[in-house]
Length: 314
Image 1 (spheres, rainbow, N blue to C red):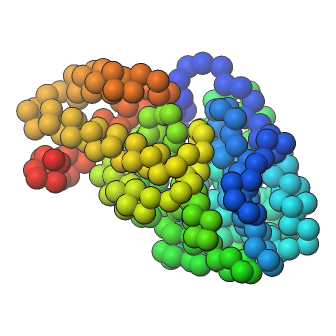
Image 2: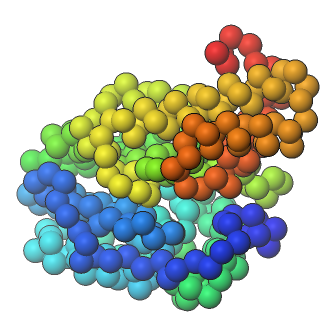
């Protein structure tokens, strides 16, 4: 895992990844986002209320962040029952769940529960190596076991409002899920979508190769077709359906340009250089340029699995 830590983020000091609950704002009646405020390794966190219960979406990294989120949610709930879910198992999204034990029912899809069990300890070790600010946030973290596990779909009745939890299948991780609030037309995507940033590919062979560019693209095509009014990305500013289209189009282009060169037997390093230059010209304002190379590496591996470019690549 030490090798993964060296690749996970660019070599620059990371700020303290603190969730600021005072920045919370309402997106729709009883649908709140605690925004990431542009801080690395802080996610957008959701609070969704119904007549009888409140669902928290993601915890922030570590128990101190999660305790602040829990306090905010409990105050907002005013006696209503609490639920917790996480969009996927990565540390800033799920590694605070222990703080909710006894106060909320924690539910996730089966693949994510397996990710927490199988991948969680390695990611905890890896992220502790990302510098003192991150290590401090992860002090005392014990990976929580979900109270409720569903297979692919779960409709959570909060009382007068049903929230839909949907496992997408393997994409950014094996256990990604999206959380939608149909009556408010709000969609929480986790790291399937980032605003103003290149898609994060946690491609760290041989340690972790669960990310799939081709499956991720298929998920984004489906989500973009739904065109929800409000989209809450894993990181970055809340937006509309264009956020989904932007990620879909980026993944489409990334796959096309990578596989086109792979069909011509171009070496992977040359592909990385050429595709990175192309993407930076296309999106000069986006952050996270280091993830382009990871995306190319993932798609080069999938090119071999799919036996070449073929009609599906166009």
